[in-house]
Image (cartoon, rainbow, N blue to C red; front, side, top):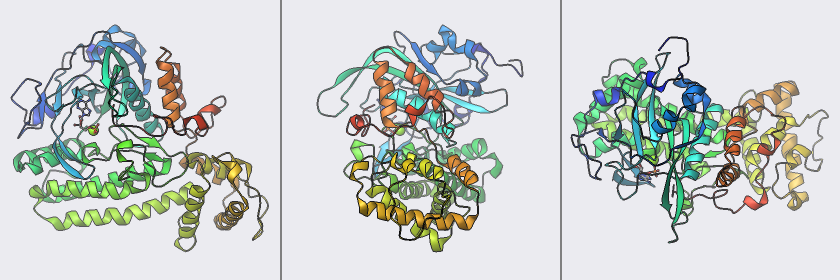
Length: 538
Ligand code: AMP
Ligand code: MG
């Protein structure tokens, strides 16, 4: 490829398949479901499909591969990114990993419906692994079909890109393609399966390695392979840590803890709930990975989970995400311990996670409120009281902070005055008619507390508002918006998918004409499947 130019020819992508070159492969070539020991992956070809149809591309993700519009306008593009055609240099494989699902060790899981095509080195020398999700069975498909349906693929495609533009670490999504096949799914697990359109998303990531990749070798006492995978990961994705040795392993684990901490704090900043934080869904790079029954907080509710499978235990609800991340990191520590042989530094890293998570949460909340820094004397109660009130008043988490940034505080609120809910905050209420005087009193008192606090910082209103709007997005991929786009697509109208992709590119900026994408969830969506709760059936 000529340096400095985008390419419109997929054939000129440069592949360097490091994972398969350096790690032990399963010798068996078939895709029959089986246990695969002492190996990191199995070579497996995608299953051909009848009628690939490209629905959407993320131009920004394509640019990571130096691809421009001509590339995705070619018929070859849809063929390659549904798995019908392989490019020279591709060497497809599925990874072997295990995991704890909902707190229980599940044994071998692996890429049951993800097939890595190969690793592209782009013009800047950066590595991007191409992975198809939904391209047919692999040795790790267990009892399932290896396929994905259009509704969940659309949700993954849009949310990966929305997350990236929110500034949150994530795997990327290059393309969303219909396969022309149908896939049977029992969406409500109630014995009424239906045929749904099949789809494939092509994901991009510098690494798709999960905590579970290490766990499977730990659990099977395959210490030599475990060490090989750790050394590979450090050399490939953490080269700044130096050559692998005991100290490097500890610094690596500490860095994984910190990346995971930062990720979860970002999620909580924007009101994202992953929904299935099993250890096989935890990226070693601290990326958001495996978009399934995820969701966005609408009314603030700390125990909300979008995942119907988790509705009873609420293990993965909004407020538990930090604790669960720590629990998952502890499982990773157990897995890598045999190679490190010293538990104390791993424990230290886990303790640092707890401590810094709490600090990070405080700093993040202070930033959401536009405060220069967190002052424990005043801000602990400021934050606690606010969250209690947001929940009691059924307040939209996203719109509240944007509304608060708009409040001028031009005249000083006097103590103990009770005022009606200010307009910008009223906008964020789901049931404004239910706000009686008691709430007005509590909100007025909180706003007085808040005003005192911001006056201490002496930040001009404009600056405070600007800073807050950089922390608090206006546009998030609300569940009902994604669902509306999916509903429209059933009538072959993909316009809303394209429009959402575009709006979510600048989520912190007000976009004239796009107000409807910043609205709180409408009443019709309150209890509609796909809008409030989702099953894992994807
Ligand atoms: P998830 O809950 O999506 O993280 O999936 C857990 C495990 O099940 C992973 O090993 C997936 O690859 C696998 N899996 C999920 N859905 C399918 C499917 N339709 N076909 C094959 N494997 C699947
Ligand atoms: Mg998964």
